[in-house]
Length: 111
Length: 116
Image (cartoon, rainbow over all chains, first blue to last red; front, top):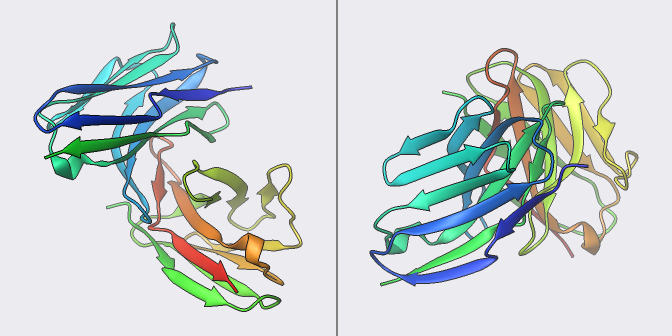
């Protein structure tokens, strides 16, 4: 059974720092991996989607990598800003097109 | 493109009543829609998967007679919470997957249900 783990559960850093959020999964047979952002009481915003054949995706200050063999993905945020404060969720899509979710990392960027 | 809407965005109802939540794909045809529930400070939990024109597949532990799902068309799925109780209070999120494409799910903005 696929399990997705996100570390750390919470992270607080000063504005301007580069940071890395981690996501690991137990079964490498995934269709894709996706990173989402969720603001308190709000829905999900898709940040990056990495297909199983890809190694990384970039969007602005965000870069996500995928290493299927080791069951890991990282989300790199460059030059963090207070507006980046949110919960970041990682989800893998299995071969049945179902998303398996991590518990999220709550990120706080201090001004 | 690939926008999913939900209605209502929030609803308060009394215990024992039923509430219907709509999920619409606005600019694409969704052969499959998913319903999730999210409790405070927790991640999303898949409740059920619905395919257009067929019965929904419910996850273990989700009561199909309590959470009625109808996927009547390629752009609309509804979730009806019947005989709601306070413990049903949660954030309900739907997603939709396109008929073609990468298999990516597109998420609605969520519906906050509070049962008093």
